[in-house]
Structure formats: structure tokens, C-alpha cells
Length: 285
Image 1 (tube, one colour):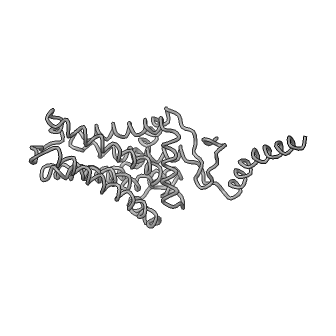
Image 2 (tube, one colour; image 1 turned 90 degrees about the vertical axis):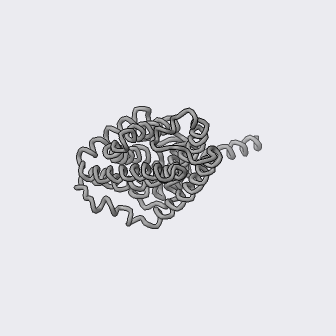
């Protein structure tokens, strides 16, 4: 399959495959099949997603000012928690039998690079958390009476909610862009965190429409799963995790070999050499 932008070689990154608007729906279908093939492991991870949601509800009742900051951590921990689901889909793809122990410890073989990547995301999350606290402090003179997430829909909270969502969207887009392909790529290949993050961002920048649709579908499904007290994450969490593996496999090609890199370099240099020879011929004439 042809890769995107073949005339602009980037030998330090793996090639990207062209995506179509229908692909995210295929990823969801493939993810659902994986969930049905390994439902027990999926429900374990789904339970972990739900526990994270219930922790947010507990924080909301105890300290409303901090729950919005903690919600940023939810987006940060989610992709790392999904690593086990990537491992399950990887095993199924290879014809192996998924194992819960392997799914829970799959990160250990790539600990250094994943720790580096996680540290970078943690710094971003800390900035987001601080921004959330500042917005909360500026919006309220005293702690508001918020007992449920739906209380934020009160018209009195509309300016605060608008500001929070606007700032949060910026950080969410950054986290999505750099992590949507990075973590499954680091699990699947011997690549460093920088290469994985740049590959992910390159995909989002060059195929923005499809990736925006994928981000919208993830947000929609997670939002619907949160409505019944986060219980929907028992199913939606592992479903999206498996689907994200198939998104990575569909979008990111194999790493280039040294021979491929040399061929790409020669291809890029050939038009320049041709132009130079034609220019020299014109001077001679």
C-alpha cells in the first residue's frame, strides 16, 4: 500500500498509510470483535476505567475544585491503561492466546521509553491541572454547590464551563495528537519515545479529517459511557482500547530499513542533479 507524501521522505519516521473517512468505523468493528474474543480480560480493564470514573465522583463530592484537575489525569492515565488492551489485540492478531498477566505487565519490556513519554505527558497534565485551578478560582468567590457532574449544566456555571472546556480542549488535542499512535507503536516496536510521538503528531497533522473523526467518536462513546455513573466504561473502555490498536495498525507502516532510506535519499537528490546538469548544459550552449 502506498504511503502518504512519498516525494518528501522522512527517513527518521515510519511511513504512514492513507486513511479514509470510513476507517474509524472499521476500527470500532475490529475492536468490538477483539472484545468479544477476550471478554474476561476486557472487563478487568473496563473495571479499572470505571474505578477511575468513580474516583472522580468521590473527588467531586469532597473537593469540587480539584475534580476538574483530576479529569486531566483521567485523559493521561487512560492511554497507558489501554496498553494491556493493545497487547491483547496484538496477541489475537498473531494467533496467540491472550493472557491477563501479559496484558498487565506488557509495558515492562519498554519501561525506559514509556517512562520518558509518560513524564512528558505528566508535565503537560500538571500545567493543565494548574490552569483548571486558576479558572476555578477566578470563576467562584466561594466553593459552589456541586454534587453531580450534571450540576455544571446550570446556567450560572456557563461562563466557567465555557472557559474550562476551551482551555481543556487545547490540552486534550495536544495529548491526543502526540499519544494516539505513540503508545501502541512503542509497545509494538523498538522505537524511542520521540520518534513515536512525532509519528503520531505527523499522522494527525497530515490526515487531520480522519483523525478528528476518530477523536470525535472516542469522545462521544466515552461521554455516553459516563452517563450511567461511569458504568458504561466497563464496555466502552476496552472496546476503544482494542479499536485504537487497529487504528495504529491501519495507519503506521513498517519501519524503513537502511536500504529504503538510501533509496529515498537517492530519489530526493535525483531531481536536483538533473536540474544542475540542465543548467550546466544551458551555460555551455
